[in-house]
Figure 1 (tube, rainbow, N blue to C red):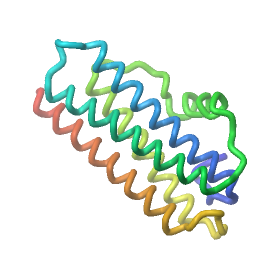
Figure 2: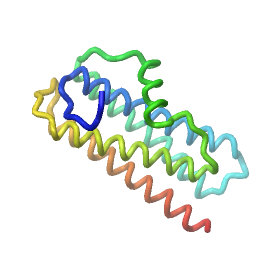
Figure 3: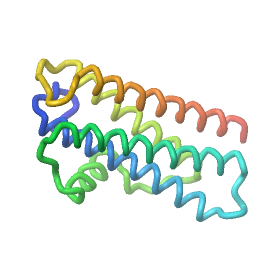
Figure 4: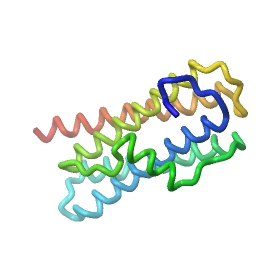
Length: 160
């Protein structure tokens, strides 16, 4: 399975959407972990950014799960998808600094959605869900990820 080729089936689309779900879980878990690890020492602006990232990721995950449910396609076990995400997107890597880690997470998610949109747009497959709705949801999530990258970058620049 590659995002460099058009999406060819509901099964492949469901699998790719599941990868998005796991990426969102990674972003949410890492943001929560950083907030808890730094506790009261956390800069309020960073804490707000992490809380927003966690909440936004949970909402993205909910929207992606709704797409998968509507596809009614056979899904892949969570553990298999999680291994794919870790292998392809280095989701298990540890980065120096809370903001750098958050930036890497946001950029990875943005790139994934950008590639997925391109793969869906390049496909001439008729999916089990409305293509316009699918692309609309993915574009909205991609835009929110782009805003997250910008927010983290702005905060990093303020700290220099």
